[in-house]
Length: 496
Image (cartoon, rainbow, N blue to C red; front, side):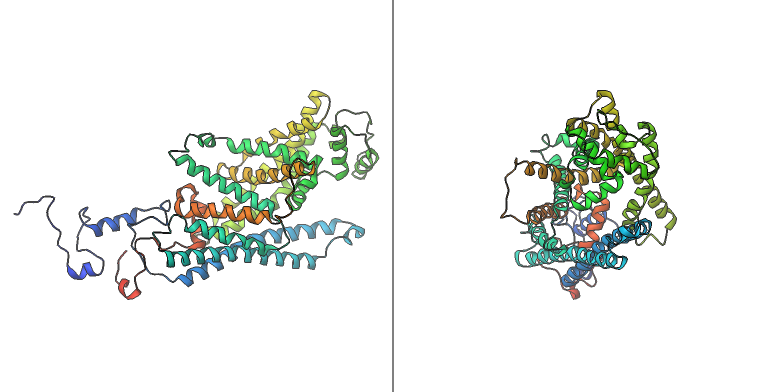
């Protein structure tokens, strides 16, 4: 028997080697084909799309990848916006039925609401479809002319930057500052996760790993958002202003009364507040010399009793908000498993909707409880006390699922930042930039460039559910194992 040592050569049948296969009956570490096959099977989605040299290159249709990315992007954009629009139209129709005829005349008709919703759905579908198609197109063009290996480190960044202006398709005259800031926050989170992994920036980014940082961010955001809700609503984005007015559930005359007492201004609408409460069946006489606005906020109810009654009503308002938030993504992400295990997926949708609705209702009701509590302790109300009283409102985020907390805190932080800088600009603390009319597009483009770069090169900084959606939309690009793909006739017998 010949000796067996490390210098023993492996015999490979010519036909197998030509087709990319070896004749090994079991895995052998000395065989390059075995190692390549093992690397492929053991790889995970956290590997870089642009740096896995051990992956075999398979041919694919570049135009088909561009087409499918565009269609899938359109489907997600239209599906999400359409789902939210359906519930918004139903909500407006229900509200319209309960209004008197005089107020109905000032509201848009049901057909106008439907047409407007269809237009918005189409615009957002075109926006995301164009973004996905542009990104994949630029990615393929650069790879074709510059080579996959040579352009691997910067190709996705440039493609994301070029695809960013597709946001203009939602409306050339429609500002999307809130969306741009939110995407910027998402890009900052991904960049910080990359920094935590880095040897050079790991220590600097260490505080970002704080376990309850998401709750702190929402507390900080709530201080600005809820203060603006009472004191300066015009600093909030129009859609968010409508949202917070609906769930804040206080008539404008009540908010005006709280604003006047907090700002130290004389009351101008106590009669209107008394008339409002009288229309709800509450007869109350307000004191012009009051120091604490509890009677303005909740009439003759106690602060604790108002909290529980408000919580019950707020929960009913929150349910229609979160049902599409959970239902629509479930239909998209779990499209294959929805028929196999409908009960488990439906149970998760119901549980998530109930939990998030409890968070939102607790958030809104506790906002009034905390401010009343602080006003009663100090026996007065001022603007700084409004900001202090709304800060602990963010603690309600602890009700939410941990994986959703950062999403909510970043969403609110984006709106808080926009509101804060709007307030600063209104009082003259910030210079005006009239030449930069679409700063939102610039910010959005830079942010998407960072996000798509992380998607291509630093995939492990994404959560798996987002990574799965991105992979489904954009497809897996050709890895740089070879500079050009093999032709189909050369790879038809290849066994990956």
